[in-house]
Image (cartoon, rainbow over all chains, first blue to last red):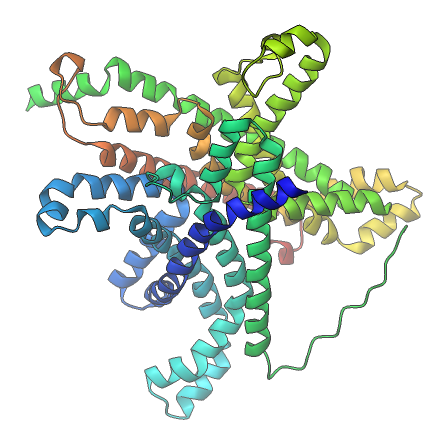
Length: 244
Length: 270
């Protein structure tokens, strides 16, 4: 028990790195995804093709490869661009590249969710908005967006949890600098020290589970707030069936 | 011009590159074995989840929710290491003498005789099993959902014919659910394909590791072509490779869907 508590204390600062990666990339990814989804649905063939290709490419390839690709691209521009500008320490830092790639990746997945929701927005409501004489911006702000975000929210919640899980591979692809270690690297190093796979990996898993549950809880509250105009869903009843 | 072509041809077919091409077999093996195992574990998990006996149902749902609640990388790393340790612990219980245990200075294994050396084939198999376990949890959910969407009338008819619960499961639910499960299973397959990029974490010299080695800057003419950091080019190739695999899988699954959907009400395909 004591061992478990010290272990939990060791992992706490490491969990902050995972949380940092997620928190830094979620808002930017969200905004980028909205533009991508609108681009994919746009009637401009160039914009639509471009967003479609982007979404397909980043959903169709592993995040691990994307990390390596962006990082090695950054490295190859180091001497010619970043060094003369004096920002090489910043641009090549995992705390910058990590969120950057995560944003690129999650934006594609989120954009696909938003695109699906965008297509599911009731046509009648848009027609009604047009009949009222709303401009395109007004339509989007008052009709399309509220519908879209409500339709997309449950799937978006899942995507956020997946993004948090994806932060586990950041430091497998990027260099670890000093004591900046996330949960996975901490677990791996501790494992290499005393070969206690069950303890270290379970504690790391526990942190991931705990944060996922917190994300589900917070996003559930937001969903309730979004859906507050709807009649409440019937409460779940606890009726255990021990044997059917 | 023709000299250029000959040069690049010989560069791209030198020994290191041929090893790189050969290492695609690991990725392909892991994807196919992992996919097959995922479907099997998914079937098992869904059958457990569908069971009439509560503890079995609990096992099924715990499996699918715990494994899905944890990052795939974590489980992917944990399972092979834990399995190796479990086997070593078991061997140690059989072969280790107290003197050998006392003589052992490292933390693990308990004695030197109990050490189990894992090479690439062993790690590859363990990695496939671990992929199967992780994505089997996803497949469990998909298949369980699909089993529930088999029309109730069919199951009732089977019960009315006097089939036992096991017969209903095997003859009706598992035979009829594929159409409903296929879209979800295609998603799971895409996840597995993408997860095969993680093989290098288990010391398998897979395509990612070789791309890194080949692209690393080389300044010694004796070692081969002198070039600067070309890693991004090699990763770009892998990036395109995975997109291509996704594209092909999508086509195959669409064709499969069209074929499986024959004779089934169109609502199933929508």
